Length: 195
Image (cartoon, one colour):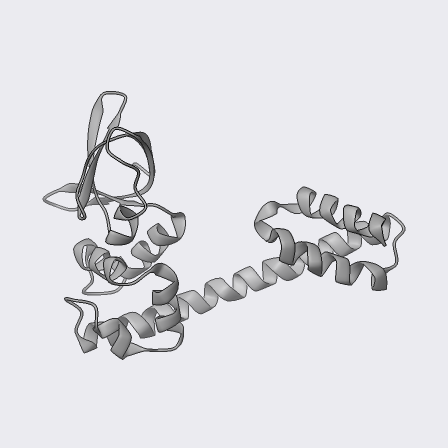
């Protein structure tokens, strides 16, 4: 299964691209959101890939971010939504806008996407809302765990808990959790040195 491609962009249209990876040209279907982020033809390109295998075909679907690919896989997990319709949804709305519409159960907004009727929009809103809520809970519990680990590390270094809690929160806001524990700890220590 192909999960990622990095190569030279040979051809691009709003629906698909051809990427040369060491002399092999991969035809990849893309949403408009990815098309607008692509480099020019003959320049390097990287895409996160979803490989779709059916009885009649093997197709590659490419996305500029892992978040888009994840939304795509969630969309095709809904009964009645195949890869083409999922691409259509991602072409009709930016990922953040789609997530917001799902969280707010804004069926009318989702139904404005060409090819999506009210029933399909309702199904998308209902089924994905639950999946997105589970992910948010997982992320928030991870954030709480990371925050507590940072506080604990600083307390073990001799700082008082009351002093470090605010510093840890500032460091997390400044760098985000994606920076990783070590970078966040260094940032906290740097900030503690200024106090």
